[in-house]
Image 1 (cartoon, helix red, strand yellow):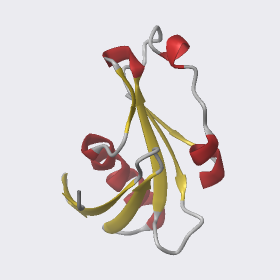
Image 2 (cartoon, rainbow, N blue to C red):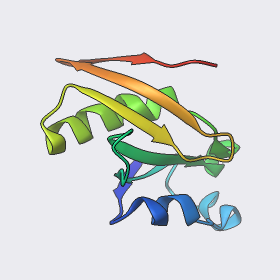
Image 3 (cartoon, rainbow, N blue to C red):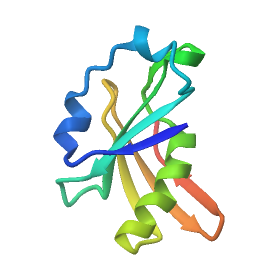
Length: 107
């Protein structure tokens, strides 16, 4: 899995990947993320895995288990709010406790 941080959340939101190229790459999953421009969220992300048959997952718990410690270290926080900027969108509350991440959200 690749985790790629970009400069701004607008890059994350406007990203238009070429899935046919990604499905032949060595990347089984790619998380694109940035710090949020909003006070409502700590970070934004999108998750792509065309190599395993998922072009874009709408809200990805496993990605947030990686994003919580990544952004927690950068922002000095153990409780974070992530916004997944897929077409469906989703908000995930992440509580990072040692080597575990607790996720909370709504369907």
